[in-house]
Length: 327
Image 1 (cartoon, rainbow, N blue to C red):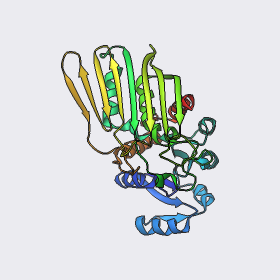
Image 2 (tube, helix red, strand yellow):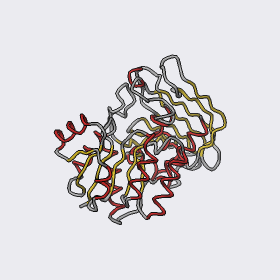
Image 3 (cartoon, helix red, strand yellow):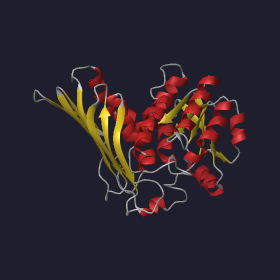
Image 4 (cartoon, one colour):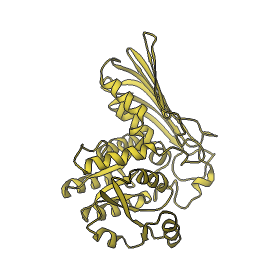
């Protein structure tokens, strides 16, 4: 049985708590940390777990194995370093800091201290994505010939009216870093590499915010530099499901939200994945927590020495480098 603490009780909390409850035979949550007295009272009432504003107390407890860090991005480098320096393993929400070097710093610290650090990139654990990864790895589809990624999401102005949201000082960026990062991480992982050849990032008239809410890019994908495009936005009302289309020599793969189809050139069509919402509408938390469950389960496997980390900070660094190319 592993013992966790959670730091930050904001919007990202809900799917983690649902996942920890389902994994109760493997992990217990001993503490929750937040500076908000109101959130502490609400959390203790709802979950029956100690909530405190004293992070030092939590990190000094030798029973705590790992910390889930769910605070805003501007706090990730400092808090992440404190957690790692206390000898605790770290599972950190994206983005792990305001700039890519913050993530590199945390990865280096974890490596030097001999503790595990992993990002919350839960889309990589979707059954459809795992099945597509296996199909590509088999080599049966042939070379990648082209790719197209479309993320036409919607966030109302009220979402960006929250203090600091959509600013460089708190979030580090806009649609790419805080919204599209999950789909872009899947795209990069499936293609192996993505090089941006041209990009335009703008803030549309639909939002009052500092950072970008619409990005369009031309790119080269995979080892053969297959041509393709990327579009990501939170200004596409009312919000539509993200899609990734990958054209191979012997099949085309279309991923839409939690589902995927493989259209083989011999006429076969494979249906992969499950149905469900993916957070593309005005409610950013309108999605199933199954990906979080599987991500935390994989993190526990790594802590127990059953398997290496399935997704680590090097994955987030590579995806952030892709985002850097577009902004």
